[in-house]
Every structure is written in structure tokens, then in C-alpha cells.
Image: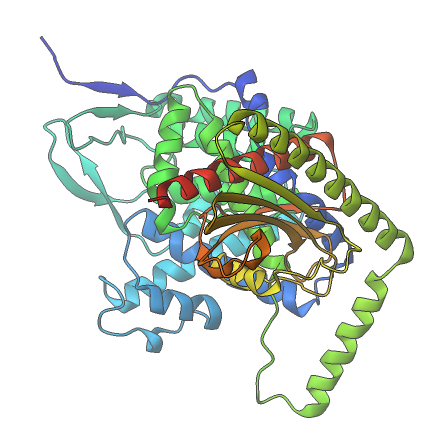
Length: 496
């Protein structure tokens, strides 16, 4: 009796309605700022061109690391992303394979993504022939792949470049489980089915985040090539995003575990974690671009720097259109009004829950035009540095504060600030931090001395004020509630 454990990864390709119910809020709430910015971009925009080149190089590096083709140190990774693939930069301990082979892999992976951009610009149709063409380019310098014979032994076999698999490519996990992908004899028909459903969904207006994620998952279930399927899945997902005017998909080495677990959850019928992960990666690329500025090299002459400066000033003036600024101002006010309402609810709920517990709670709110709106500038700067984004202190902001007076000589302030993030004037971040006071010098709350700050460790929630929707406002309310709940937990843990 055959007792071998098997796990069926592949099922006949279809698009389940579950995919339409998956969460894309991380992308949806930031995307309007990118769409607005994209309208002003040209192919000659230096910042945009440089950012895309760096993103392509990062994709090329990380996609091979994910597949264990090579390792690359963090230091040389940063250098390669910024400067390009130059083999003379590689140190003795920077990689685990021969530098020449490393450079071949990196260049192949970069050229494959570059080819995807060219494909999109040429308005070509996504076909079986194109996927094979892309695979051949991606694996141009990969001669072999690992195969498993019927007895479970591994061996190196020639890689079929640009051809679908002719033999099973089912991997065996450490626990002995055999993972079954699409049989080779059904690969061609399943790929045709995949492309047909993809076209139907794109034509039907399905969210491109969802389509790209579904396509990626379905492609990995088929596993049509003998090797390179993970890299191909990320390239084809990137293609779908690039056609939608978005950035290519990059999964970092530090995210591999989250990525694999999300794929496995999708294998089991739950696509939510995978869509949320893809949504977050696209949102990260948008946020990184809106925070990106190409460094001006010291070798540039004063005249060249002045010319760049003048160009940037002109661009800034063009953006300050009165109608758009009026819209942004109205949307900031909507955001303040909603947050004010949320804090009012929370104040009532806390007072009710803590009534009779000898804890005094005070709530303070400061709006956009209030003379105290500039308070907490240093704290916001520190918070932005911690979470790696640019805090634009020249644009409007507002804040809310809960004061918890838990003893005559001990007080905690929980501050939630909504301020502008990135160089784009429509992106705002909701952030938070906790301060505490003690050693009472005189009577009254305001006379307690500042004793320090305690991190809440909740990343900022970034949103676009180009468009304020009820769903966005609900997301903000849920985020603020999480902040207050977590802040109270931190306070509780510190009380002796």
C-alpha cells in the first residue's frame, strides 16, 4: 500500500468570487496620490527614470535570492541598486557563487524585466508564445536545474529554456510530502485557460491588484516550466501592474516567509493574505517613489545645479493650482472632522469603561489653523525617521491627545498626529507616540515634568487626500482605535 504523503497544489484554473472580496485597502487609500502624480510625469523625468532603474535592479537581485540561485550581502545589494551591476564592486564575502555567474544571473533577470516594460510599451498581447520568449530570456545563462527521479534522488538535468516542462516538477518537502503541480500533459491547456480568464478579468474592470495576485497564484499552481516558475510568476505579475500604470512586483528576501505562507493559504482556498501582501508591496513602491529624490552629484557645476533648481521651482508652481489646493484643503478638513468624531466616541467609551476607577482622562484636539498645530514637530521628525519617510513640515497638520492622569505624580499622553508624508502634497500619515510625565513640582496636571517617550511600535497609516471615501474614513477609524488600544496596553505594562 502506497502511504506516501501528497499535497495537490494544482486544481483546474478558475477565478473564484472569493478573490473579489479580498483586502486592497493598503493600496486603495494611497493610490490616488500616485495616479495624480503619474499624470504630470514624462519619460524624461530624471527622478522617475532613476527610480525605475533602481527598482528594476532591486527586483533582479531579490528575485534570484528568493529562489536560492545565490546570496548577496546587504552592502553590495545597496551599492548595486544605486550604482548598477559592476563586478569590480564585489568583495570576497559578498556572494556565495562565482562573480561571473552572479553577474550573468543578475543581468538576465534585469533584461527580462526590461523586456516586460518594452512589451507593455509595444501594446503586445499576452500569449503563450510571449511567456516562452520571456522564460528563454530570463534563463539565458542557466544551463541546468535540479530534478528528482522516481526513487527520490536529486540530479542536475539540462534546463529547457523557453519550453514548457516535459516531465513532472513536483518538489518534495523536508517532511517527505510530495507537492503536486499541474501534470505536464495538461500544462498547455491550463496556460491557455489562465490567459483567457486573465483577459476576461482585465476587460471586466477587476482591480489590477487582485488580477495580478490571482494570476501569480494560478501560474505557480500550474508551474509550467521545468525551473524559473517563481521568477516568471513575479515577472508576469509585474507585467499586469505595469500595464495598469503601476510599479513592478518586488518580493524582498526578508519577506520570503510571509510570501510563501500567503501562497500556501491561497492554495488552501484563502486568498486574503496574498492579496494583502501584494497590495502592501505596491503601496510600498508608490510611497518610496513619492519620497524619492535623485541625489545631485557634487561634480555638477553651479549652473547645472541652478538649472535643476529652477526646473523644480517651475514644477512646484505648476502644482499649486488653486482648484486642486482647494480640494486638498477640503479633504484635510473632512479627515480632521472624522478623526475628531472618532476621538469623541473613544472618550465616551473610555469614560464609561473607567468610570469610578480614579483615573482622570482629558482629550485635546488641535485643528489645521490652530496656533498650536505646530506642536510635536520634533517628535514627528523622530517618528518619520524611525519609519523611513519624509515629514513635510511646511504643509498643514493636526493632532489629538489623550491625557491619562493615573496618580498625582504620574501622567501619560497618547498623541495621534496627522501630517504630510513624502514630497507629494497629497499624502498624509497617521502616526502616534506616547509621552510620560512624573515628579510633580506643583499642583496641577500641567506642572508635571516631562520624563521621556515610549514607542507604541505601530507603523504609520498613509493615505491620499486626493480623494476621501467612506471606506478610507472607516480605515482611519479602525487604525485610531488600534492605536488607543495598543497605547493603553503599553501604559498598563509600565505601571508598577
